[in-house]
Image: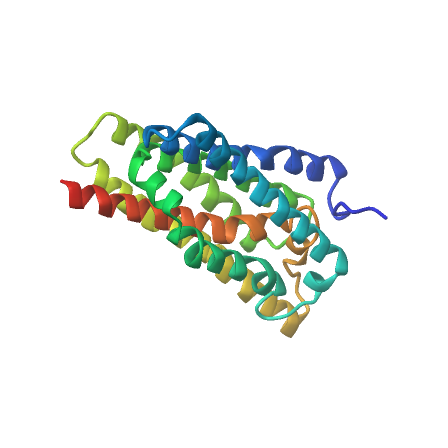
Length: 244
């Protein structure tokens, strides 16, 4: 059985799987740096770094198993991948992770610059464009998902630089950029739902390719994770405002 998506060349799937650990590393490293600045002992710092990889490793195994059942391939509104991956992961972040003492400690001590900089991993959105190039997903969905993520990733470099240089406009720039970052990921989810609805009603091309392994890992990982990371930045901005 071929577990990789067959609608695009296999090298695309393999390249995507090769780049995904980079995104996890960026998140794990930002958490690690926050733990170091909090003066946690070396064992705790190592645990923080490894726990991010362990958590996503277990989660990705769950997504893989679910994808092999074929449940994500049912064309429903909203797509089932939202119910079985994005929604539960987001609830876990908000109800469990955000209330952990270690999370609050890391957010309090992590630099705002590092929390913005890690969004550079969103260059992985290029795979929306690549998958579209091979005719596997609709143009509108690919452009919203691909160019939106690329734009946020690219601008994160300049926002992080402004913070690093302590520009007087850095925090307001971060606030505005953060709003656009959330709007970007919400627009992708909305476009996916609208495109799926049109596909069911008219028989037009759907976004079902993004429900196949390995590309199902994009919505399963990015949807909830990115929104939570933006919420974390808002939380950091609020903490710095209270201090100042």
